[in-house]
Each structure stands twice: as C-alpha cells, then as structure tokens.
Length: 269
Image 1 (tube, rainbow, N blue to C red):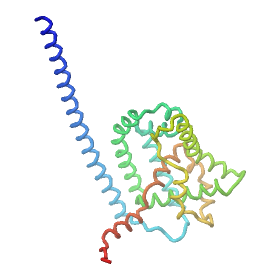
Image 2: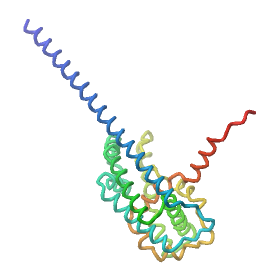
Image 3: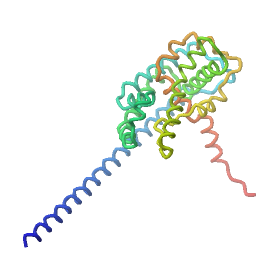
Image 4: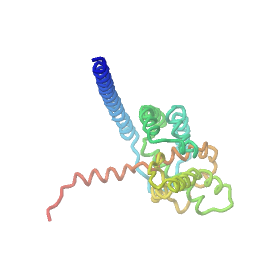
C-alpha cells in the first residue's frame, strides 16, 4: 500500500511539473506574441517617419557625382551621431563588438544570438527614431543619406583597388579590414566544422562591391573633398559596419520600379 502511495505521489509530481511547464510555455508564447506585436507596430511607425522625411525633403538622384561640400558635412555629422546612438545601446554595442571581434564570434552560440536579437530588437527601433531626428534636423531624407553613403564608400573602394603605397590606400585598407577578417573567420569556422552554417554577421565583400557598381565615379570628382575630411570619414573602426548596413539597403528607386511593375496589367499571350 505504501509503495502504491509513492507511485501515486510520483505520478502526481510528474503531472504537476507537466502542468507548470505547459503554463510556463503558454506565458512565454503570450509574452513573445505581445513583444513582437509591439515591435511590429513600432517598426510600422518608424517606416512612416522615414516616408514622411521623403515627402518633406524629396530627393532625386543627380546625374553627376559631385557632392555639395556643405551637404557632405551634414551627412558626416548625421553619420557620427548615428554611430554614437548605436554604440550607446547595450545590445547594439554588443553586436558591433561581436562583428569586430573574432573571439566574441567564436564564443557565440545560436541560442546566444537569438537572445541578443530578441532583446536588441527594441534598441534597433530606438536608434532608428534617433536617426530620424538627426535627418530631420538636417532636412535630409533617408534616400539621400543612402545615396551619399554609397557615393563615398564607392570612392573609398577605388582607393583600395587603384592606388598603391599612398595614405589613401592605407586608409582604405584599414577601413575594409573588417571584411577581410570576417571572411577569414568564416573560412576557419567551416574548416573546423563543415556543418556549421551559422553566420551572425551576414556581410560579404563581393556583395558589398556589387551594390556600389552604379555609384562608382570614373572621374573621382569627390576625391579631394573626401580626403580632406578623412578624420571624420574614418572616425572609428565600426564606421564600416554601419556603412555596410546602409550599402546593403535596397535602393528606393528599385523598390518603386517593382511596385510599378506589380501595378501593370498582365497581358494575355
């Protein structure tokens, strides 16, 4: 009889743990759903802010590559403040450190990446709203900011590819070194474990260059201007990480073209 009581008690304990586990799982799902609903609504609000900037300060890509000097200074100020805003956020600062540091990337697990992504989502949006305020202060739409980033990084790329043994070439190599270190880390990781497909920093130098194809200036019109502001252009090692995010953005003119294509009636053959 005593043995049966222990069995019943044991089963009751298992049942209790199971119930608690289910309740905990339901609570976690509810919390995650509320969190992502909140994030989704805030992301929509942020996109509306970017759209409003585009309406208030419309930008059309110019035919020439020449950058206005005053506008270039405003761009650099926005970029510097954006970098500072990102670095001030704990989870975003962690991501930048992880992007820079081979040791931190080696220590990272898939669960760690998910955890940091979950907790960092709100901070990404917060940094986005801060950038909107920087852009509005300068009366600049995001489309213009993306354009200037690509014009400037395309010129820096030409220093890396076309110049040798110059101060500009050294600056370009130091700027792009993050890409080279990242590629080497990927190769070493695959050699250690061919089945390891986790890539916490999905940036590729060849893809980066491809996205700059239409922004290369054969005359190097802005070379002197960019060289003169080198201290701000190469303000920190994380500048290239921030620039890489911007360069990877889908060009607004392509999005508009796709939207127009979707609106066109399909002709029957």
